[in-house]
Image (tube, rainbow, N blue to C red; front, side, top):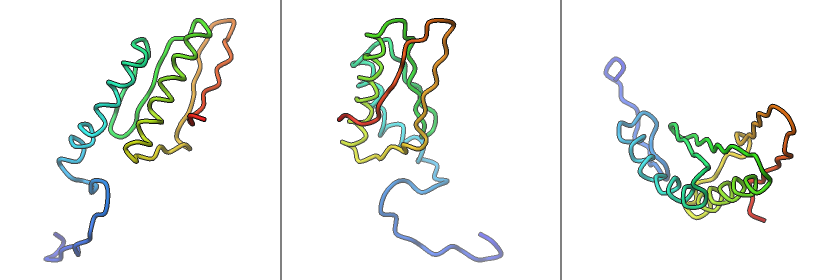
Length: 112
């Protein structure tokens, strides 16, 4: 309230209004099954959630482990398509750290 004034009511057609108290909790409940699916796909790949961001982490020592990580990326993409929760592809990034003999790692965010 600002000097006796209130905002006008607006219809919310999707999502959760910014600044809501239950919003973050409801979002975590909504995406909680994504973590289970990722763990079922590959127990060595770690998925971390913070607010509406997800980080997928995997130590890669062999080419087969790269395929395991790609399978988890595919799982997240399929999950987001099923729940109509569009991924922001512009924010999807890959970071690789290595000491020597890097393994070529190219990941795709589509399941084609």
